[in-house]
Image (cartoon, rainbow, N blue to C red; front, side, top):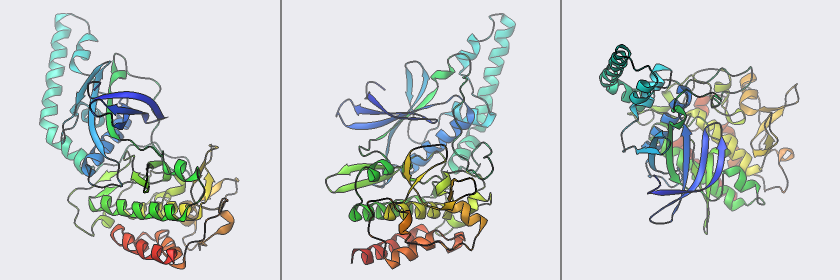
Length: 403
């Protein structure tokens, strides 16, 4: 990879891995390079889902993060480029078997050198290869259609499931070298939280952000991609002379449903409880099956927070972030909208809600925008506008706001 890209500096780190700013050797163009360590099958499945979703979007929409290339790391300095349309079958096999599958040469070195044991190793390798060949179509179909739910640890009571944390212990041998490297476009404005909260409210920027996110969601849903973890942290910003350009990113919890006819996406049902507390829909909080309309609820929370500059501090953290809530719970923590609506589907939300906004205060949304936000935050998923209608309604509401 070093012949194509150079690593400049680390720009982010979390349970998923590390993100670096890098450069294209030939052109000097900045890129983001994400290293995803593949040391347990749960995380590998998330990484493959992210890879497949990003390949599905290609570079087709300005408001969706673009994937330039992908490499599979198999040794301390051994990286193999993954061609478009191909999947790392050993990682797919690891997901299906529930354990990290070693490369054949690692398996051989980890056993004794007796002839009997060597024969056993060869038989095992041949059997693995045979199984891989027989199951290759099934493996690719499984990842392509993404029909299985992600393996995510059971959430505590009244808390949401999130990404599984990386396990501290690693497999013996050189498994700690196994990783996927995703090379993506670099966004110089950080995430949406960082960008908007670092400057005074700007109505024009706010309107631009929500308009772009509506366009991105319409595009993703038209491809059968349900994000399932929409929040300001997962929206990146490119600062340009014409204003912010936002990019939906982080597709690790997404689902790709291929061959979905127009209008059928809302009928596709999912069951894994995943997402982030302040942005999860009530049906997800309740552990019910849910559809792509859960993404619309998450967008509604984001839009409300952006337009009214509502700030929350999530339990266990000290970082301020954009988000909306209803009230404090009995324990003193802020209660997310989805949780409150799950407990009381008839709860009436009050938009605009001036007393929750952080100074300096932006102007309140127009009546048309308030109505649209209430529709997006409806407790009944069927009452929320689908993504293709959302963009049209948003344009109309913003036009009224500008007057």
